[in-house]
Image 1 (cartoon, rainbow, N blue to C red):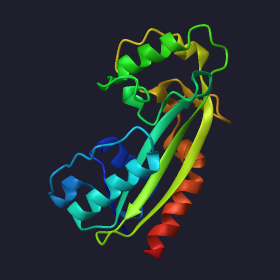
Image 2 (image 1 turned 120 degrees about the vertical axis):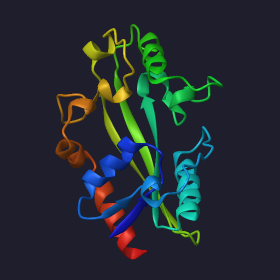
Image 3 (image 1 turned 90 degrees about the vertical axis):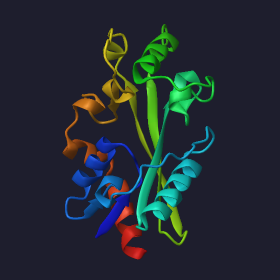
Image 4 (image 1 turned 60 degrees about the vertical axis):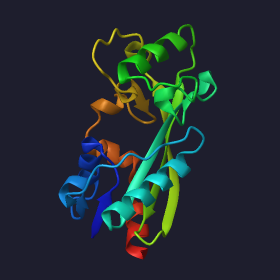
Length: 196
């Protein structure tokens, strides 16, 4: 099976290669094409994922998988939401990872409920414009001790997110452990790709 990953993020491409070791997972560098930037909105993960998949499929000429992920903290009314780096549209300029963490720490001061979830939309598109989209949630909590840690380096939210059923942060989990939370995603992608 061959699948192009419509993303400029090398870590994301590496993760998909680990999830589908028997597949030919392609990046824009593998095909020698230019990296493209697709403007994302702040309202819909599905729309963002679809726009990226269609644009990359047209550029690559390949069956393409793209995704978009939002981070939702229940006690903050679901913020930062779809547009994580702009905190749900609160800011015009995108924040760095470290700035986001500092802002999250500030917003969570004095709040006991640390429940939250990542929601992802996945879009698979072909160069002719056919596309299929589905979503998945990974629920958990922010580790209170890690939330109060004085991070000095760039650190993603995954460094303090603990998925339901685990006692370690997302960043500390092995690929095999992450795959257990993404079993349905893996199965759905396999089903869609085989039906295209």
